[in-house]
Image 1 (cartoon, rainbow, N blue to C red):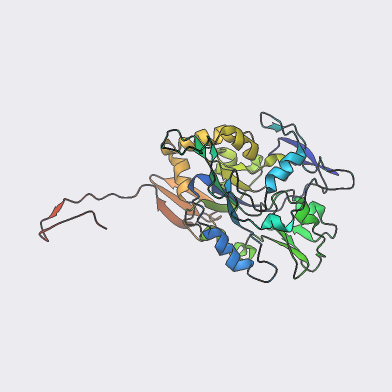
Image 2: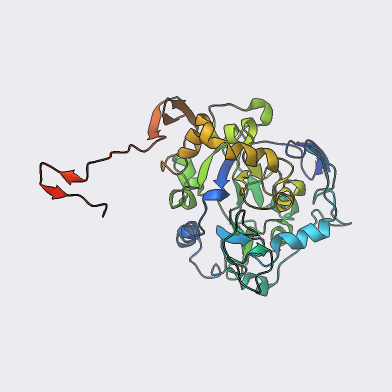
Length: 376
């Protein structure tokens, strides 16, 4: 195995191929505090890419309720239990990754779901954790019960487990954008990728006997457009762009700013060692111990920074850009009370006011001689 650097773990780790980063890396930031689980993203993806035979159960994009929601059933807890202890010392991960913990003859520590594990896409939906509810509940602040919505797509990882596990070398990472794809002409349906992907975002198609996965809507990416699940997001929780390595982070790159500079967006299960490229602004109301398990040691800093956003015009301005354009917005800047999305060359794509204008009118309209009401 090769020794590669994983900046999310703050250390080198073992991987099956030498470090080879693409020219640009697809990345996304999801704000979990704004997700309402309307599943519009899920349907947008489903109707675009997985409406064929053998794809009925595939959800390249899904939204589940945590802590009890899973698709497939128990996708994360099954692996967490197999991996064993996962300890951090500050930002340095001291446990084993799923590559380092693989057994003899295996490339990746993994497991393959059964058919029935895909039978319950809405399991745990809106089920809350916390205090007992057997005798009913009433309004309390802070809330003693909690859940949150977790939107998931393929993470287009820097060190993909699906790629490492494929005995046919059918899976590859595009140099131009870092999107991970499966070469359908090479795939023989061994399903090692299904077993290896810890996020369970590769799926087996029994009609074609090949594996399939999220393609990052790369035809749209090539045209400078955002993927389907992003442009259809009603809550405007998503931003897609490109991420740099920490030492190359640019403050005018929206993803770099949120991940590397302000550190409000965190990877999902970084301890698994894949360096996933979808980042989450963690929910502010969930017990910190649970969030540290999911998003690593940066949770406290991320939430404190997010809570201070009302006093941080740059941060609140950048968050206002989410979902404001069908185009990819690779650069940004704030100008007074406006935030501006820019192309790589610095041309303006859009301008978003950070404050909605408010007009207060008198209750009686003298010109029309009528009394106004607040009925829309």
